[in-house]
Amino acid sequence: MREYSLEVGLQEDIEYVDEQLSNFNESIKPYEQDEEFHPFQYIMKNESDEIIAGISAYAVMWKILYVDVLWVHESYRKQGIGSALLAQVEQDAKEFGCKVGHLDSFDFQGKEFYEKQGYQIFGTLEDAPEGHTEYFFSKKL
Image (tube, rainbow, N blue to C red; front, side, top):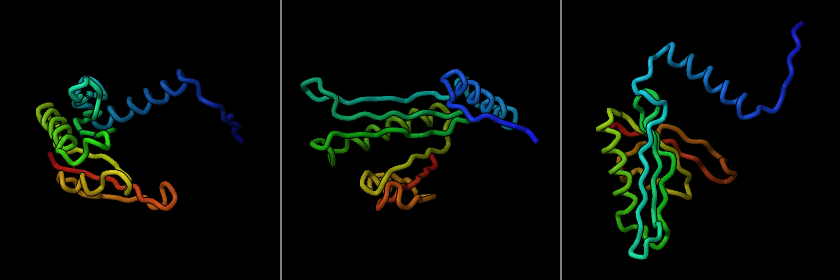
């Protein structure tokens, strides 16, 4: 019988695990970009130079767009700012060679917004957090 030890992973341990998974992935399907995560990140500022919105997205390994964060300050919502940020990232991603994008959002966030931008739900996670639903979206670019 084998014996194993379960330990809390240190940063260098987790980096090793990440590298091993990356090596395996690339051995099955070679990466289509030089860096595993190619960033597309923008902010918008108002006339007072305050950040009122921002987006952080990445082309992941095989030129798949992942939108990680999109935020617009409450007083600037419904003015097209989120749409403009998302459109810019999608355009950058297309120029980079991405053909599909995906993201997730909760029922109390931007479900309807993403649907208006052409994203389609491909999965849901109920009660995450309790009493709410997480939606998973994709879009052909």
